[in-house]
Image 1 (cartoon, rainbow, N blue to C red):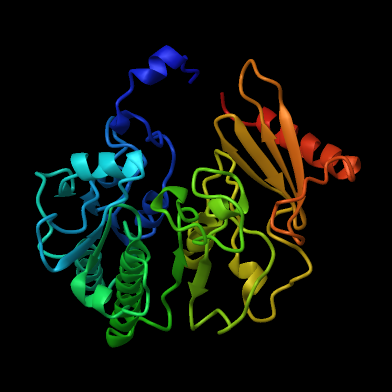
Image 2 (image 1 turned 45 degrees about the vertical axis):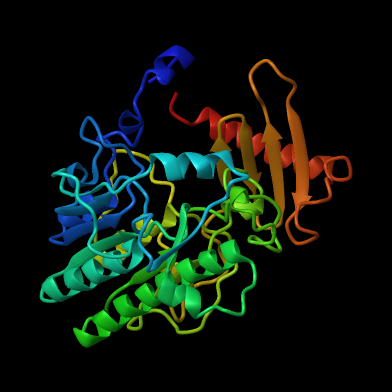
Length: 363
């Protein structure tokens, strides 16, 4: 629905999310007989039927607030960014807010990343004899920056304190991914389990690590590659070739169609599904002449972008202000040279497909 600025400002955080009318991957797979579990983040709404346990997950271990450990715990090393107002707010406001299926809030019994990993391993062990879908959405390495002393001490070669804490957080995340893979192996599930690993965005500019997204320009919240390019790895020993790299641009929404295809689920036919099954492009013997998407689109408020395999048009169109455009060659210098005057034909083509895309979106 259309929402005026006044109406939008009155919505609580939990009221802003994905409408329950959407068919989540959990709902789709539950209909195929999968046991569905969510652990961690859920920034898709919490009111009016939008919570994870109301959107197809039989079990949802939610963390609605982001401390990794107690502020006064000597086994947890912290890095506070006094230069950043966001960080100062987080340290003042955040507390523990874990809950299960909408139940009472509680404090996790250990460092958050390791706790999530423990629970993920329990899910695998408990469901080894039936199909299951586990959505493990780690906080790490989101701020506030807190790491275990063990991980911090293991990285003594990193001199800058906040960088060392950040790296230690990633170390615990990396260890957790390894434990999940080992649990699949230990329970005889490794060969025929599709594992997909990605991140929600690039590194944030407010953590004070200027090279965190190197060699890409920009940060989280921007539409430069530093903000929107994320790692994406998939592992399925029974079907996917090991060690292969696929270079064509893909998007997070492709995970929906890919997982559905792996489970033998039919995609909803009463709505447009943007994602495509990526396995058809990467399986051994797959036809690699086509690409999953001719164009990918990004929109965030007044900022918009469209890219093809090589070119990217970025647009700033705030209401009441002049529209600005930039054209970058993604095979060149990392979005530092605007080529819109040198290649007006490319800009016109991308502008046209972006306008068509915008015209097709719900109001």
